[in-house]
Length: 142
Image (tube, rainbow, N blue to C red; front, side):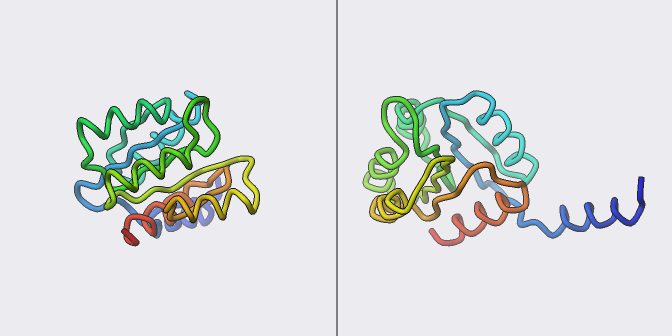
């Protein structure tokens, strides 16, 4: 192993934006592997993370406990899509910011996302450093 490369990797990790005390993220995706990876990455950044497998499950969680700093949702899911979830969330919990992730989006999705009050539309896959900056930026904008 190259000690300089290890040092560069360490410095990059240290420079990434991190969670502040008490920040929580609700992550919604219908794919189990995506939920697990996102939960691990967000946890690595210091966020408390709750995951939901559908928009409907996310709404049930929010009805019981809406004390989240950010909601991150997939765009295309069975049942309620991420944009529909964002509309409900922004109406019922207007201080909760929403970020939407997609592997398939186009310009029309961007326009619909903006109209739904989604702060950022992200293309999957997302690297850890990009995720760190997106989450921090979204939380700070709310």
